Length: 457
Ligand SMILES: Cc1cc2nc3c(=O)[nH]c(=O)nc-3n(C[C@H](O)[C@H](O)[C@H](O)COP(=O)(O)OP(=O)(O)OC[C@H]3O[C@@H](n4cnc5c(N)ncnc54)[C@H](O)[C@@H]3O)c2cc1C
Image 1 (tube, rainbow, N blue to C red):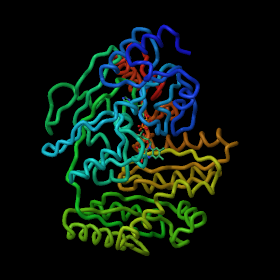
Image 2 (cartoon, protein in one colour):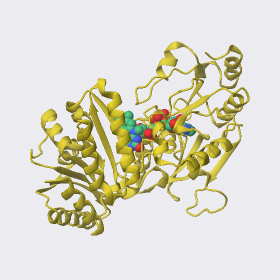
Image 3 (tube, rainbow, N blue to C red):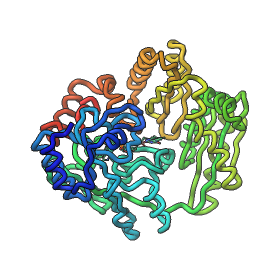
Image 4 (cartoon, rainbow, N blue to C red):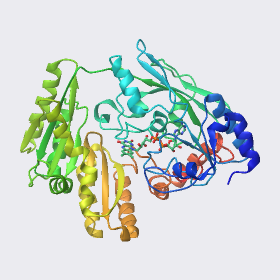
């Protein structure tokens, strides 16, 4: 519970309509997509950057823990008040698109803007904001930057960090800092934005983001390749990319996912299929799109594809994408609890990594359907268990993480570490590296009041 004197002081900063400590608000802000619950002691809605500064300064001086929050769609507990304290929620006021600068092709936004709202505003002006996490309809750009979110379009366009040109943030002592510029080149000073991206709200609170936009490609087509095995599909990925294909997305489904899609949703895929690749290609002239499709088709067929489908219109495109978009819900036929991890390995290691994942799953007698972003090496690994098998499930995950790190991969390609992957940080980082992270954290947040306990720090 927050002490009355603190509630009074913080109310003076934001007004009584922007701070709550009643039960309903505490429950509403106790969740994220992990569905783990930690109730905060209060939730506060800053109206602008100066409020953020005043709130942080007060909390720092009085050692009150504070956790920034976007939409609470995180998969790893980053926005959960795991150590109590106050939730600082950006969605109520700090949710404005401040500028679409068409000449420099940048957007300036507040952190509570929803990803899709920026995409729509950019597209209305012939521009394009490519990062597209599957949560794009509700996750905020502040959350996206803090997690360095990725999406299906990462294969061609990259991830959130590739679009952050500049930002403004507030340190726990209330100092307002700027990092980066609207300029394409800027090498003056430390790359502060670089260190704040993916810092999961542990170093500073983001208050403004300057994001790169690109011209919107005029033409797009959707393709699907069906393969007898994972190895065939992965070889097709390597060969088509080195042959000059540059697909917007290149998504992968394995045999178990295909089986689940057919059984649960009656999806039109051959029962003997061992893997599927599905995605979009785009371009500014139809010939560019045709070249992409031809390159993909040739490489897919050389690598054993039994079918190469091209959508003729939007409805057919939706049908091809239906399989990928419903992969996650279909695999529940294999267990009532899904331990979903988002490992990433250098693309060339994908076939070996998948082979080892299935072996580890077999050892624990769990089905491990896999799908995800083959074009960039980021795969969603789903250990399907019965809820009573949680301990065994976590052992299986740990073994998968160890194998992934040994192959030069990472614990998380896009969901971050938060609380759920914190116990595994020691697998990926040495004691010296963890100490360096702690030193960085201390330099930004000496009293450890900003989202403490996250990222294993
Ligand atoms: C169905 C579903 C699909 C998803 N698909 C994807 C996907 O394809 N790719 C992907 O990368 N992720 C995906 N996610 C995960 C999640 O949506 C992303 O991590 C997203 O970036 C989180 O945004 P948010 O606004 O919900 O942030 P929150 O969950 O509220 O917060 C995430 C982190 O950011 C910090 N934070 C938020 N705002 C600020 C701020 N202004 N300053 C400092 N720190 C801040 C929080 O403290 C927390 O650590 C998915 C989630 C769901 C539920």
